[in-house]
Amino acid sequence: MSNSRFADAVRRRLGAAGWLDRSQIDAALVDFRGVFTGEAMGMARPASTDEVAALVQLCVEHDVAIVTQGGNTGLSGGAIPATPRSGDARPRLVVSMSRMRAIEDVNIERGTITAQAGVTVEELQHCAAEADRLFAPDWGARGTATLGGAVSTNAGGINVVKHGNMREHVLGLEVVLADGRVWDGLRSLPKDNSGFDLKQLFISGEGTVGIVTRAVVRMHERPAQQRIAFASLSSLNALNELMALARSAVPGALSALELIPEVGVAQVVEKFGVRRPLGIVSDWYVLIRYDAMRGGDDVARVDDDLTMLLNRALDAQLITDGVIAGTDAQESNLWVMRDELTATRSFGGFGVKYDLAIPPDRIAAFVERADTLVSTVVPGALSFVFGHVGDGNLHFTVLTPDVDDAPLIRAASELRTKLDGLVWEFNGTISAEHGLGRELRERVVGQKSDVELDLMRRIKRALDPDDRLNPGVMLPDE
Ligand code: MLT
Ligand code: ZN
Image (cartoon, rainbow, N blue to C red; front, side, top):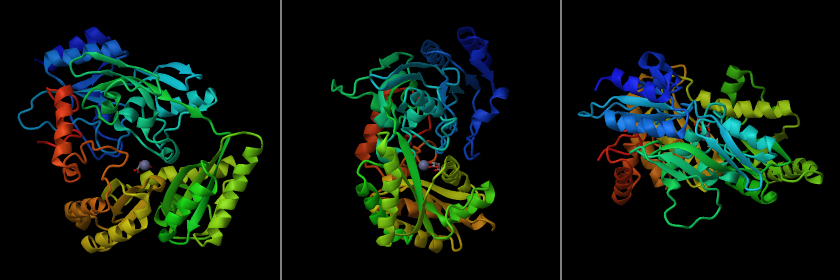
């Protein structure tokens, strides 16, 4: 089979707009951080579910492997073609969902949106807002990340503490299977106990068991108002008590709870022109958001609630200072600071990066142990921690800014092995919200029992016996 014959077949079925040659897709063969690269013969751009199904059938006929790509904002390399295993000579095809961008239905009574996989998370947020509802999934890459990618990675983000991961937002799915058949599971029932909940296999399947083409997602009631506070922690040991207080002071109001370190604040202040929210400097800060669900009096009360929370936390010496964002500009300043923390993980060149989760009540103990471990293995390295602490989810990076990173590169493997072990000692996971992708698929073997790995492989074999869908991603080699 020649690649050009395959390309011609795709063009015949999908039209000229449905095919891009290898020379046109450089940007799709590297992730946005430049960490993962890959090779493919070209990119197919189907415009409908029928076209995806026809494309998969062509791939079966021509023995081509498929890597589905959404916004290419993933952090584990799951959307970039992996290097084929030895003996696997099949060409790789990137399948982009960028022409499947329709929001097909907004149903206010059911609280659902039905949309194609290439719609962005931000478009879904705007669509829900226009209906005076909330599409809750949210993270820094909202403007580029797509519905299909978010479903396929079970993406998390800043609202998980109140609304849960992507999994909690999907009521129904349509999926093109590895043999080209279409599974229409586009239901919108909050309850459906009619056997296996098959959609859960494709949510977090990272494109290895099917291609998500459409989804029915939930909208929630939109809060009448949200307010955020920024506070300096007296120490990381105060975090637990503060988290408990933030939850209990006004039950149901807490909708985001993020930990931010001074090393991060200093970097975003310097590099992104963000204003320091507080006059004082502390090792750790938290960002806390409260929702007011009703208008009228409740809107005024969200400020009172946050003020009361800060005062109680000050009295209990959990925080040393705090401020509530009083204007839209102050609020967006705080969110820019939070969102840009992602970029600060790349400062200093090479970094050992984690998206880990441990039980939230053990964060301070974990950070202390991890810092000690890092300074033992790579003296002088900087451990940089931030993240969604309400979910126990820490973005942990080890950097050596402004100095030669060769010692860190040399020690990276030992450091990863020891940090993985520490995460598991704390009953945690080495992937909280970014998935396994190419980065973690081998390391996850240490986290899962043989039984669990066997079940995962059996599911893969049952749904994709030819290993056609995203080979070399998520599943460890046997
Ligand atoms: C975030 O929370 O900002 C993202 O998960 C990205 C990151 O891990 O840096
Ligand atoms: Zn995150």
